[in-house]
Image 1 (cartoon, rainbow, N blue to C red):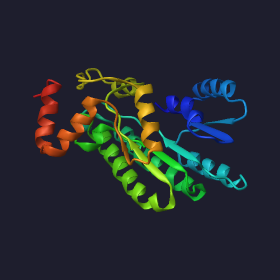
Image 2 (image 1 turned 90 degrees about the vertical axis):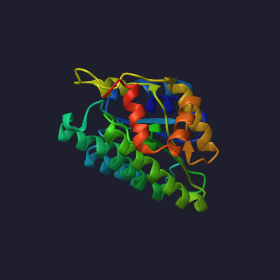
Image 3 (image 1 turned 45 degrees about the vertical axis):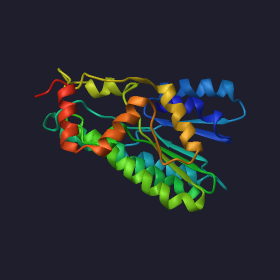
Image 4 (image 1 turned 120 degrees about the vertical axis):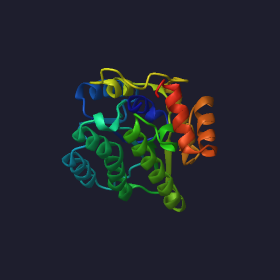
Amino acid sequence: MGREFALTALEHVTVDELWLIARRKDRLEEVAAQLQNRYPACAIHCLDLDLSADESLTTIAQRLAQIQDVKVELLINAAGFGKFQAVKDIAPAMADNMLNLNCRCLMLMCYTCLPYMSRGSKILNIASVAAFQPVPYLTEYAATKAFVLSFSRGLWSELRKEGITVTALCPYWTRTEFFDVAKRETEHAPIHYYNAMYESKDVVQRGWRELHRGKDIATYGFVARAQVGLIKCLPHRLVMWIWRKQQGMK
């Protein structure tokens, strides 16, 4: 999803530079080449950094500080991962990394960029429909996305008077590499039923639309919106019982 946002960013903002940040240098350079061909006037910078490492955030902060009169027009936080496993089966180091990347790094990226933002600047944080409910066997991931949603909405309220918007994009099941990571090293993934599956480009377009409208939450798809509505009405214990039945769990 981050790749789709990167490829469409210059259709939605006018900037002198676009920074692409991710771990895999080859993927970054592939996206940068496509963007440079389409937008030769914009400088595309690739920063192959692991955002879960403190030194990576320090590097970004130092790079920003070196630019005179810099303004950050747009920040998109798309890094994150989840695991389809029981909490007791996830290695503590993996759990700690998930919490760090999904929550702490997203928050610190906002802290890093906010001093360079002013009226008209925008932030989009990728949360999830899972942020609205506890999700057994995706427990920690759902909890991290609940943090992202709450943090984003609070920040949206704080920054509105300054003309800076913050949107939490809450995708439902979306065709991305998320599933490859979620199932990796899991012999029998406990989650296998998806009552809807959306395309990344459609979810991203909804994200752009709601970001420009200044909305604090963006959700794509009838099934996704219906589920969020039901979750608000039903007790979470019942929601979790329904979820387990859908997945064929006892």
